[in-house]
Image 1 (spheres, rainbow, N blue to C red):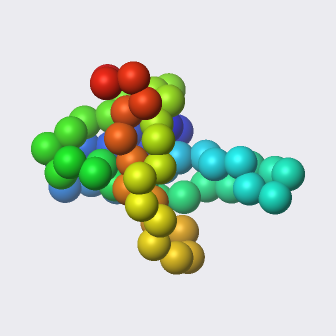
Image 2: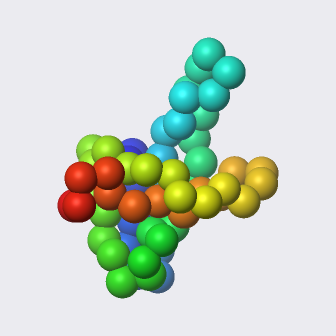
Length: 60
């Protein structure tokens, strides 16, 4: 995570794509979750062109 995700906010995540790294808007899968900067996340859902829904990879 490069931008904090919290209820009512949109964060940012950097994802490796085609040999580079691209920024995507990130929302938590569970709208009550807060995911801090630097947390490793799993992309659960992708909505083109640049939106992903994420969860913490290791439970927070």
